[in-house]
Length: 129
Image (cartoon, rainbow, N blue to C red; front, side, top):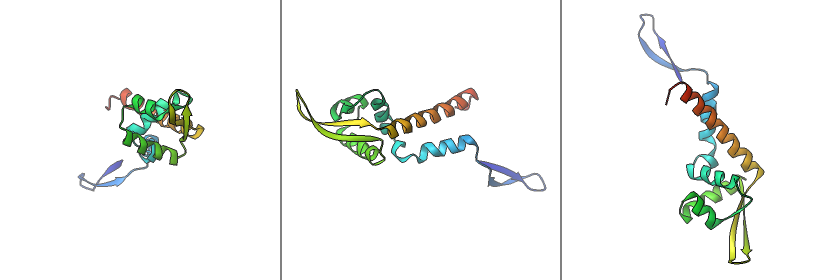
């Protein structure tokens, strides 16, 4: 955000950064949250909020992304500590990869969603969209 400064004859030709508002900080938090900077990863986290654990295949079907995209996204979320990945067996189908959201992941996605809710509420209220 910039403030436009006027010179002595009233022309505005110089821009300087103004102090950051609470909303500027919220927007920068959203864009700086690397693991949640992708809509696919946000979708994965939302899908995981509603279940104890899910297989890789079921998660892929739920968020409608390719195997390679899901694999890459899950690795990023795992490195951030937002999910755990375990190999296991299902009684009826053999080996499976299970993905589960962590407490850190739950907190992070809830904070992310709350920040988005605050921002959209503000902008919709002020008809700035």
